[in-house]
Amino acid sequence: ATVAQVVERVDIYHLLFSCLFLVQPTTKLFIDGKFVDSNTTEWIDIPNPATNEVIGRVPKATQEEMLAAVDSCSRAFSSWSETSILSRQQVFLRYQQLIKDNIKELARLITLEQGKTLADAEGDVFRGLQVVEHACSITSLMLGETLPSITKDMDTHTYRLPIGVCAGIAPFNFPAMIPLWMFPIGMVCGNTYLMKPSERVPGCTMLLAKLLQDAGAPDGTLNIIHGQHAAVNFICDHPAIRAISFVGSNQAGEYIYERGSKNGKRVQSNMGAKNHGVVMPDANKENTLNQLVGAAFGAAGQRCMALSTAIFVGESREWLPELVERSKSLRVNAGDQPGADVGPLISPEAKARVVSLIQSGEEEGARLLLDGRKVHVKGFENGNFVGPTILSNVTPNMTCYKEEIFGPVLVVLEAESLDEAISLINANPYGNGTAIFTNNGATARKFTHDVDVGQIGVNVPIPVPLPMFSFTGSRGSFRGDTNFYGKQGIQFYTQIKTVTTQWKAEDATLTSPAVTMPT
Ligand code: NAD
Image (cartoon, rainbow, N blue to C red; front, top):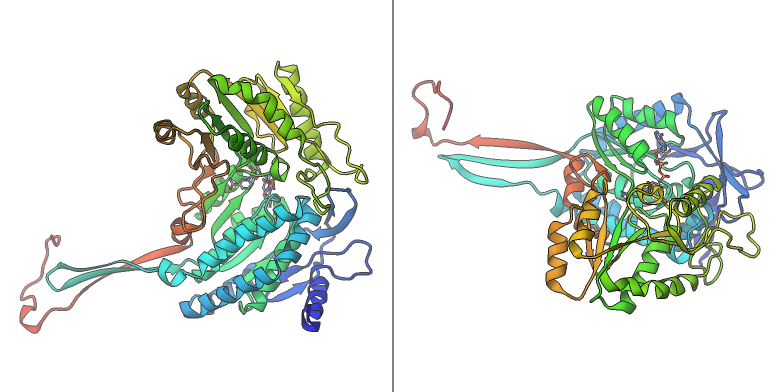
């Protein structure tokens, strides 16, 4: 690293944490282009999930601070929305390079606060970076439509305009990717943005904000507040905020959707999931089992698109012992340790919940083929670890099937036919993602056609669409009508003006009033 890069990094540290000599480094607010200390008296500890040592604290922003943040967004909107689209594009072109240059540091912060492995944390940044790269195509994405000669001498065209101050409320499980689904798309369209990261993992968002500032985003175009319910209610209620993007649990997402909508805001709410992977007997066994293990236990199952439920159709059930063997080979360890495959869960409470759901499965008649509850991680005995766990003979009435477990637990059901598997999936309230593993095109086509789920993989276990498409979770996994990123993301963050013009030649001037509806 050059001296400048080292100085920069130290600078970032100072911005992230108020003072290196404090026992608990303090996360700042980002208001009107400045990283500032909060005056609050209420703080939330940030523990390292691998050790449960407190590594920092995050403020619950005061009402005054939240008002200052939204006022800053409102003031910045008048100039940012009028800044040429080419200039806004330039900011995001510089931003994507800065994210690439700092990917290791962003990943380090993610692993420290969230727990996932460093390699997976880089993937988290990378998938967010792709959204920023896509945002750089804004000059094409924001094009309007034109239809000449609607009638004689009359043309119609539409154009997209920003809507004002927008806000994002993010979950803990993707500290980089999900905030990057939000403010880059909102801002490149000409909106200003108020971001509330998850109070459990604020560090990565703070560094992303610093990099955006370095990329040339003017003061006030992005503001960051921290907190929990009071901050969420503030966002739902403040009249200057025109749109809210939420990602997280159903409990919070349904509440925010209702409260925000009641206040006249656009709301898009991506929520919980129970994603089923259907294993057909004609599938490539080696590939399928490896994909299932990776998609069930990667990120310790804390992904909204984790393949947490497998349905083995017909004789594919004979592959279960091999699935168990492969799952056993994963290494459970702190995310920053070499070779770690499965990191800790986010909190002791999350671990206790996962453990109790495994127990409920046993009590309700499931077979525990692999039990990760007693996993021992040398040197990290206080971490929130649960090892890969597999429950088979699960039925839809069991608690472990009905609830989103959000941990490294794969629940296994069996079906006699593809139709039975599809019926099971369609009867489940969630509709985030699903996958089928098969070598038969007709089977795959029937599945993709008949299954009522928004994102489907054929031999692809985690079919999260790239940003030129949109994230199209459905049914119980989504509230709203316009999805995140892709064309729908641009639609969510813009409003349309439609202009109809008539330029008549002198000799075509109307000679009397036209009182009937024009046809
Ligand atoms: P969460 O709902 O607990 O928190 C998300 C955000 O909402 C946080 O910023 C938090 O401060 C706020 N919040 C929490 N509880 C609230 C409440 N009762 N009222 C108002 N605000 C509240 O979610 P989480 O635990 O951080 O994330 C895990 C959940 O997110 C899982 O259910 C997962 O499936 C879901 N998720 C969904 C997607 C998707 O795209 N569908 C992506 C990632 C995560």
